[in-house]
Length: 251
Image (cartoon, rainbow, N blue to C red; front, side, top):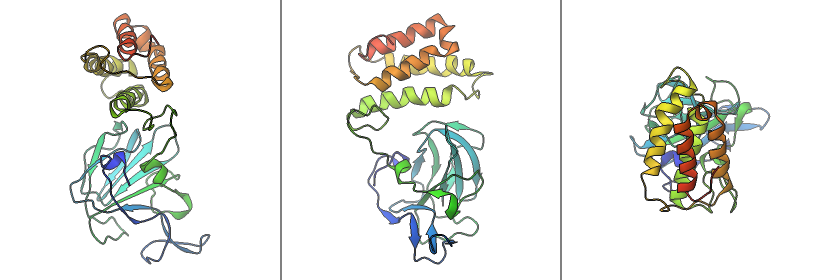
């Protein structure tokens, strides 16, 4: 399986989501079996960088575990057996941002048979994990698949460079617009973070990258509609320059 969480490198599943013969997993009366609430990924040496599967806010960091409340959902993504976190509770992170390093540590009530990542998705509020009734299949989160022309992050009709640009724009929208850590308001975040990001993109030769995807247009249009952009002629002009630079027309 490939996933943005470990850098899009193929790794194997050592234990799937659902019923399991392992007695260390919690018993679920409804399924009438011991239930593995997440998915285990092997070939995960201690210290492997782990990146956020989704944008969101860090809601729990403790021994061997990290919880991330996924943006725009009622779900919490759990990274278990980690060696250490690379972020802290309260931080907002973008999809693909470094958040932890893999390990072989065992949180209270758990077990491990060697270094691996246990990743699970819970619909219950944090700090709950390892609960069968509120767990959901994490594979669509770890390795989303989209059809050609879907216009979504990870879409297989995008080149890697196009996907990277689209992810950057979406991360600015998803995280920047509500993360006030770099300024008193979202306005402050946009002015301190979005402008430098745009400068980096615009530093490439014009026409070096062509993006023909409606999702990019939608993201740029949303960014332009933000009050902080609308009230800043320089930033607004840069957004226009970005859309032209990428070959998608003026948003």
